[in-house]
Image (cartoon, rainbow, N blue to C red; front, side, top):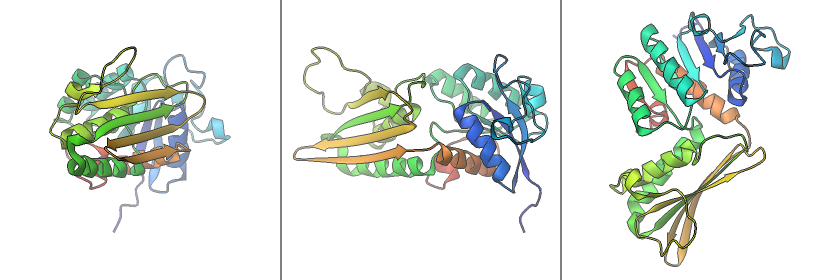
Length: 271
C-alpha cells in the first residue's frame, strides 16, 4: 500500500524557466507538496507567492532565506547556478536532506565535492533529467562499444541565447559516456573548439560544436562518422516539461535511497 502522505519538495531557482515548470508540476501531482521556493536576493519574484505567475495561491512565498525555504522539505530540487548549488549542497548535508541537482557547468573538482557529499546524504546530479535523453545516453554507450574508435564522433548542441555554459552539460555527459565505453578519459580526447588551420582530424578524438540563439530549449545530435556511412543519434526538446517530469521522478526515487552519489541512470534502472 502506498504512503498517502505527500512528499514535501523544496525548489531552488524557483523563479527561473525550469523552476516555474517544476512549481506547476508539483502543484499538479497528488503525491507531492510544495514546501519551499528559493530565489536569489535580487529576484523580482522575492516575496510573491510561488504560484503567482500562474494566478495561483499556494501559501508558499518566494524566499531568499534557505532556512525558511528548506525548513519543511523532504527533498530539495536545485536548478540554480554553480556557486549557489554548492552552497545549497552544504546546507543539505547539514540537514540530512536528499538533493537533486540539475545545475550544469561544474568543474571536475566541484563534481568531486558532490561525490563527497554523497557519502553523507543522497545526492543525484543530472546534467539532464529528461527520461528520453537518458535513454539516448544508453544508446550512445551501446553504439560506442560496437563501433569503436574507427568512427569519428562529433557532438553538436544548440540552446537558447540565455544559457551561460558551453558546451552544455548534456553534451559533455554524452561525450563522457562515449569516452568511457571506449576506455578513454574525455578530458584527454575532447576537442571543444576549432579555429584556423587545425590540421587533419586526429583518430579517437571527440569533437564538440555549440550553437546559441533564440529560444531553443535544447537540441543534441551525436554523429558517428565512418567510411561510407554516418550514424546520427539525436534528441530535440520543444518544451521543458519532460525535464521537470524527470526531475520529479528523480526526487521520488531519491527520497527512498540511502546516502550515495547517484545519476538519472540509477533512478531509471539503466545502470
